[in-house]
Image (cartoon, helix red, strand yellow):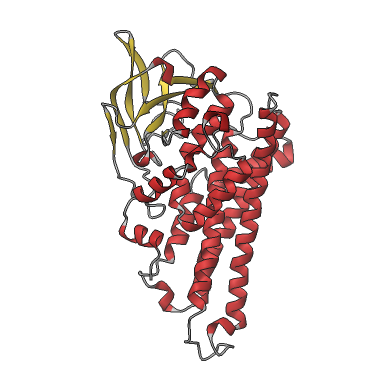
Length: 384
């Protein structure tokens, strides 16, 4: 009864096979320009495929979110002379993971993971959690603290191979959803880092990167909404058993069941449109970049607000659909071997990233007071 993706999740078997198929198909090189060996896809083309991938298995686009975010960062924030090496690696099949967030009660805005010089070389030490996709990756982009930079003004990435001495990756993600995204702990114990693999980024000014990363969750939620519609239809169509107080000879002819299916289909439609609208804004920014022009702040703010509004609307709608799904059947819809519960668990997990209540506040503050949205944030404990 279970499809391949649902069986994999039911057994908690990490998706090495699926990631390998995507690698072989050149999926990771979609945004790499053709002159660097990639497929040269536009943002709109990329996110259309991400929605389709999420419909098949929502773990996969989240597992690759850091990879595509890294590629986008190379395109828009790396110095021109730094780009070719990394884009060629991606075109050749390299997958990049992420090591950004640290667990525990560290100070807000400060990182314990650091790069430091010793005997003329650079070393990396620290521990990260929520290292999404890193178990599948060849390289990992590690957010670090440099002793000679102000973390309020600069963010530093150290790029290291995942098989480098001193790198340890653990499959210890224990959330109830998105179980196969490889989002556990990564440890770095005095890992040598090439100086050319340490890159600094400004943390001031508007950026498109927050919208890029948020759109991955929006597109994945849209894919989940499509999967909810698909699985609800597949569940109802062959059913013969009806309730005594129902209104059809078989469930698919019951007007109330038809209404629920219609609501689920409508949620999938609107979630897809919302994701496409944010992708359209990123496409506009990409066209500006390709012309060699600076990205206009008003368009960056507009796209960030689009992403926030889409996040707020899509999150509520898809979580509602994941619950409403069970209205099309009785207790048989709860059977473990159907795994229909995975849609709510996965949507709820995605919705817990970049908490939606704060995005709603930012949007409201902008509407009321014209306040610019927040482009940079972190987690930690505030000083008393």
